[in-house]
Figure 1 (tube, helix red, strand yellow):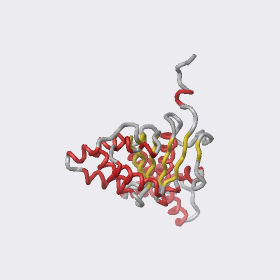
Figure 2 (cartoon, helix red, strand yellow; figure 1 turned 60 degrees about the vertical axis):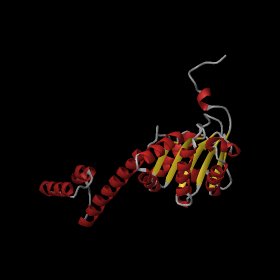
Figure 3 (cartoon, one colour; figure 1 turned 135 degrees about the vertical axis):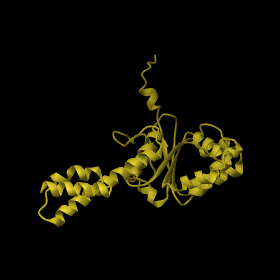
Figure 4 (cartoon, helix red, strand yellow; figure 1 turned 90 degrees about the vertical axis):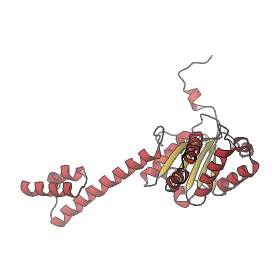
Amino acid sequence: MNEAVVNKIRNYCKELKLGTNIVRSIGTIQADSHEEFLAKVLEIEIKHRETTRKNRYLKQAGFDVIKTFENYKFDHIEIPVSLTIDTLKSAEFVKNKENLILYGPVGTGKTHLAVAVGVAACMNNMKVKFFRTAALVNELIDAKNNGIFKKLLRQIEQVDLLICDEWGYIPIDIEGAKLLYQVIAGCYEKKSIILTTNLEFSKWNSIFFDEKLTNAILDRMVHHSHLLIFEGPSWRLQNSLMKYN
């Protein structure tokens, strides 16, 4: 292709704010017709936009650490017949507005699985938000005190998947429990939630200190949920650098 034409196309790409990959690749695109050349240019732009979008979703999700399914083992998890490993890995259940409750002792891989599902959802063009539950409650209280609670709720409503990690690790006062209930109620049948917890359902009242509120949250969480039970010793303790006699 004539160098002057290549430079003109590069300038047009910059004017249209198309991906830098197009600008860099213009001179190397091989095509037998103008139509094929245009198709390849558009393909480069689409792939660039997909990558940009996925990276933005990952950043907006707020994961503490990115975890994936690579080398993740499921042999210590009791998975219900209503769910498959492939459905987990593809985050397909999110499209059906279904929830996951990951229950088991500390250190058995619940957070890793929750984050890996969240990352998979981002890779499948779904919006995700990750919170430590205590941090979410604090953020809700701060938002209410600063008059921006509805704004925060709207932000949460925009996601496809909400992940609440360490559910029940720290007791929540009645104000925080009521605000958290509004989040759960707002998500009910509209989006998916993943909870990780080491607390059985019968003890959830010890989190919220209000039986009616606890029952209301349980009712909405359990209705469309898959319960995954994690067993075995703490992976972190088993792989600790500390040595035990």
